[in-house]
Image (cartoon, rainbow, N blue to C red; front, top):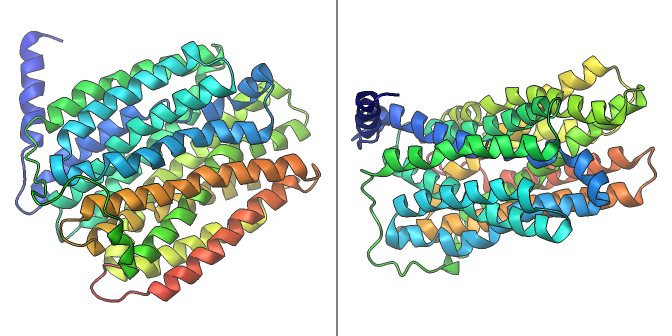
Length: 423
């Protein structure tokens, strides 16, 4: 790339990052910010793809596997209480840029330095801290640029790139493991994520933050007095539990199906990661589609309908191990869409019901309690698999997720669609 080309790219990104009065002119910026998140999260699912190898190498049981994965979400959830409220005081630009660097470094260290349960937990937790400083402040900036018409679409686009990166991460890591050891494959994905750091800087260097001058930048738990916010956070927490159970344990379920059909273990692991990633990639369009639906039909109604679909599949998929492989993949594709499609709805709704001057604290509590569900869900299912007879373990594990869907739907029905599309 020549010097003049670099200057042209910098100017183009600067123009794309310029503020827009009505939000529509900000679409190029929105797509580039979403692309930055996509690149940052390329190593996100590399651990999941490598679980069969890591489990054997480190002598882990299923519960410990779930704990390592959930350490990422635990770091996200815990740091949200401190990092996200700072956006009320400092704005989002500096937090996002610094957090991209933290995320990239921690992912690069995992395949190099992790050698067991404790070191893996620490590095995954730090990576989660990096993610929260990009993902949640990123949604805040988007909600400020798209204040009215199309906010569901805009946040849905950002979340769609997040989901797409997870699927691509899983599939590409699986492909790389055909020719490399799991550590090498993980490191390659982490090195690719380095591009997100300069991209974040170029996109946000002209960002004009609008911090709340009256805010202390500290967490304000009074946001929990907001009834609408409480129901949205409950549904989001159950959604996160469902989402991350599927992301952790669905590839392992596919491995079980393939091994039962006579495929060798290591080949089954690579095939499950690749096929599972490709099958779930269709779900990447779910958040933007769900956001558009919620703009039209209301947040709660749309979220409840989507939860009903994913919950129905949860009740059944764990009992389908004997079904034809093509049927299982078809169900996986629908499942991938359903677990993703409602995600942006909660993130959009919470920005609409938050009280003036407390958006940062509301997003912090939303992120913390939401991702706490994501922390607990995979661990519980791992425990179910450890204590259940092998013949019914998968059925019981995913049926547990179906129970969560029922609870979420009941909460969303109580919330209803009071007022303009905000709930």
